[in-house]
Amino acid sequence: MGDLRISTASTADLLTLRQWAADEGWNPGQSDVLAFAAADPAGYLVGRLDDELVASCSGVRYGADYGFLGFYLVRPDLRARGYGLRLWQAVMELLAGRTVGLDGVVDQQDNYQKSGFRRAFTHVRYAGVPAADAGSSDVELVDGRSVPFRELAAYDRRFFPAERDAFLSLWVGLPGHTSLAALRDGRLVGFGVLRAAESGMRIGPLYAASDEIALALVSGLASGVEVAIDVPDVNRKAIRLVEGLGFEPVFECARMYAGPAPVVDQDGIFGTTTFELG
Image 1 (cartoon, rainbow, N blue to C red):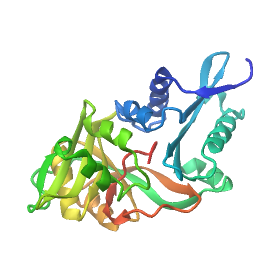
Image 2 (image 1 turned 45 degrees about the vertical axis):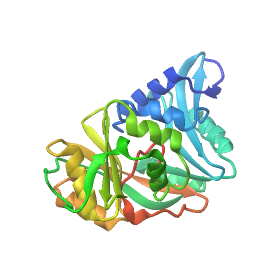
Image 3 (image 1 turned 135 degrees about the horizontal axis):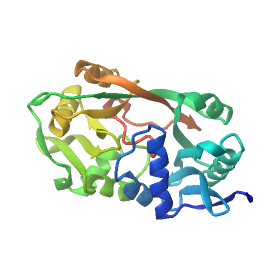
Image 4 (image 1 turned 120 degrees about the vertical axis):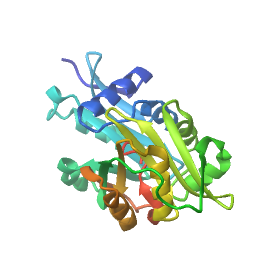
């Protein structure tokens, strides 16, 4: 085989990366990559040997100061040959000068620490079947697509460290995605998105002003349906919520940062959007 050639991923490459993520057991959403591409079309790098895709790593840039690293994958039969490190270095160069976040699987966390990343908290994926008609009765649940997008984007900025309007507009409206907004006296106090995944359904993000509102959103989105939510363990209300629903932990990874950890409304995050993009 020839030397590794690194380039920006094509749309077809992103579909392959989604399948690689599924093969790793990460359970990606069925249409995730359509929104991922919009976040930063030049932020997905791939490596090829003799025109054959063998490795990937993404560095999605948000604003001028923040970036997120994901899709760090090498084809299983070609691991431990340095190809992943080459992609990693290319992505870190792409993200130079920014705080960089990632969600690291357990067996790679020591390596990330050696590269300057520090653990902020753990994301725990909980799965289960929520009951219907639960949660706060003093909020109105409406289709997320009916909320003026400027309001929705401003609400998202409370929980995410940079503007991501292109991604968010697709995430809310893609076929197969269902979104609900919680309104109290006309004011946005909660938001969640349900999507079909490789296996079952997933909710992310799940934002709420209280655990009662979060419960209402979960019940409204997925009552009677098995669903997974990626819960930050620093939000103890979120942990109590999913455990109270009888959900079980099935997977975990660490949110880590190289550079100062962003300041967001962590208490309002009951479920993160996606491990690949933050």
